[in-house]
Length: 259
Image (cartoon, rainbow, N blue to C red; front, top):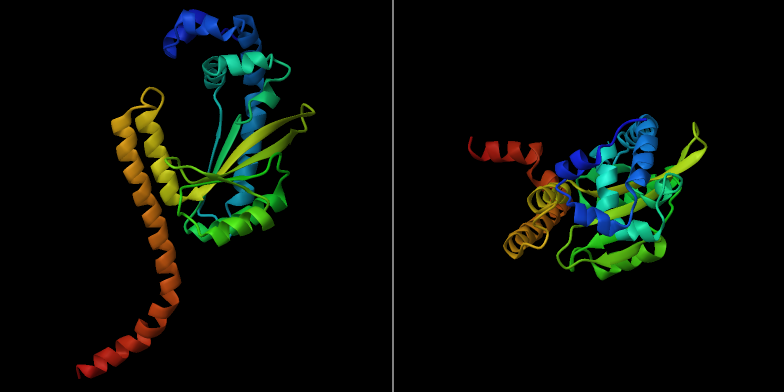
């Protein structure tokens, strides 16, 4: 059994004894989860790689990022959300079903509309445990697009005034070696959305989530990201016209004018 030293752990993650005690979770329970999860990690790493291999060659996919939650970060999350998990009587037998982001995958694409093809690929390849959620800011998409996404693609639309833009999937993952199942949280977004999300996370988490000054500037940055995505779509749609009128043939015509 691996040792998870309580005092050392609480110091490392800046958790007070009072905060831990307020969760109502026994340290022995956390030790059991930790020991079990350490043995599970190699299997999860293998599954995470499978997601990358299956997605990376898809036409609309720009890149794929994957991660398996570290054992210490798993324990820290259980403590941080302690009462929520304590109410569900979290233990070594059920934590794999309660915590759904043991594997995290991010699928990035270049243009906003590329999401539709990525969505189809995901549904074709994996079993979805919940209805996908499209997180958008007001004005990101036309009402017509959102209605079609809700009706024909079976997605829930979540309007977030100050949040990020991303489509969330919860995917059921069977572990053949242990005859169990875990869940993977997959997020699909543009490369611009990913850049904003990464910067937002580094700046705000874990101690400045409610900082009004940082939130205001990050909100401005978020709107700039939305404009960048709009510009990308506009340029993509403009390209056929520009190529036709200002391509190699038109260059030669321009050269002839100066002869």
